[in-house]
Length: 97
Image 1 (cartoon, rainbow, N blue to C red):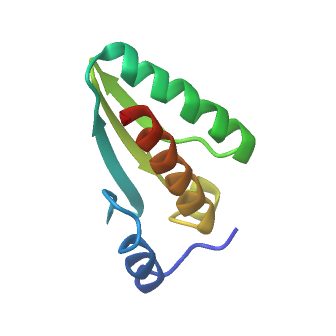
Image 2 (cartoon, helix red, strand yellow; image 1 turned 90 degrees about the vertical axis):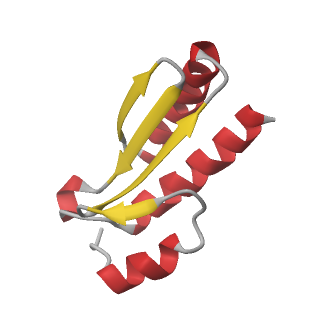
């Protein structure tokens, strides 16, 4: 998969709510009501990651989840990162309702 240019990334990220681009990756964080809700979202995201064969760098502390997406094989952000970010946003929206 080809690495996107900074211009391509900046244009795409404008449409991706709650994500930022820096350090050759796209980043977001979510805060949940409690640890259980956070872990539930992480488990649902994990299934999407497996389906796409693309895995985030993420950390969880109690009710917060920090996510970084980059395609290591391309040494930067690709379409696959945006596809996973969009899926993550849909999953978290469902979790928050």
